[in-house]
Image (cartoon, rainbow over all chains, first blue to last red):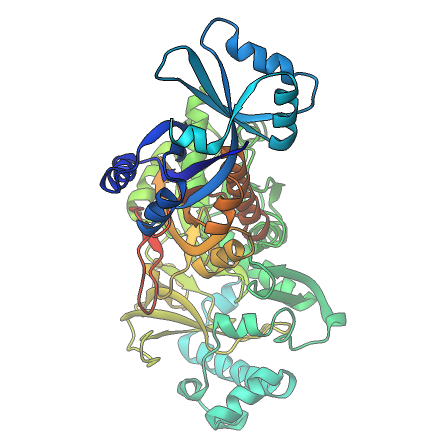
Length: 143
Length: 435
């Protein structure tokens, strides 16, 4: 039930992000969602795409530092308390969230939250036991 | 004023006779006590007895920084450790540092030469000397300290750093002279101003500045900011430490090389040929009196010229001009000498980095800054895409540079292949400083 995410190391300078999106456009890659973490000197772009393998290959070929990381995608109803219900479920389980980002599904009914946990297997186990909808990679890529 | 009237004003003829006598002793001694020199002389086909005149020095092979490193730590010492009373070292990772030793007599000579420097700068035993050169393995602190004590002056062993405290001491103890790098003098002036201290009304009247290149413009700036007379001193740890050459208040044009202890030559760095008097080239030293760590024709890589004209101060020792540059890639960052290869050695020791790096040197205000740009390794990034992991790597680099080399650097991780690739000799340094 885990999802693969593409991470790209970016220097903090003009035109860098544009080079990434250009490469993806040319390869006809669709971005499902993304987040950009920034520090003073560098940033890390994280992408959920429709084709993980192709994206990784293309960006590497263009000379980017690319890594594939495992994240967990959880679907919750798009209404107040949605995110809180997940965090509440995990509280007290000693599972740490490294980062997260989210988007709302096309239907507008549900939100998908992408989590990077220090222990993804344990997080999935807990969430599923408590009745959350954990999305598979295949489902997410083709949404 | 002259500290050692007899030796500092020795007529040229007598001085050269003394130099030759001492040179012949040194050559004999290194040949018979240091394996490195015996081999080097044999390879060059010269015997100690071949040195019969001062120009015969040119028949002897050069000694380089690499030779010092190859013989790390004690391979070039000419006396047993039982005769050595002090060790100093340049910064560097093991095998890249250079280590120097001193006998009791070496320390006595060094102290005298530093005392000569203070007197040449117009100081007497009535002065209070604020010594802000770093104490420790660096030769600056203890070198100046012993000289000040030899002179009988009062010395404040301040060492480097802790600028606010330095300014407090400058106000409260009222030192009349200060020793530090010229850029630190400017930094003190600036910080003092910002603390609301009138830095021109301190008791200070003389500054003795060295360990990094500086210009006449900078001298004017310092003299104006602190209302002192700023004097230039030269030295390097391999040859002894500070006090190899010193400016005099009478001339203020070039630094007298203490020629009864050191022989200076200027060579063409490309061919090794000795250049005629007055021409600009690489400075080469042979020590004439050092016991523990004698050096024959040591290539300093400092580019300057010797001034053959007599000086109005009465010293017979010839002068060397300001250091105008380097004939190698050594950087001087806030008085600390560092080679790009040493930084590379530190980077190679850290997992997850590519061996591609670039060094950006700038001067912000009065202080040098060094930025080390290094490419993120594939391995390192594929194992972690988190900001904290990359920042940990940055902090590790900063710490290792500080621990091994004693330099404070800013570290910037960059994308792969964003740094220029070189064919052949890489030029990894961008020096934007205007000195």
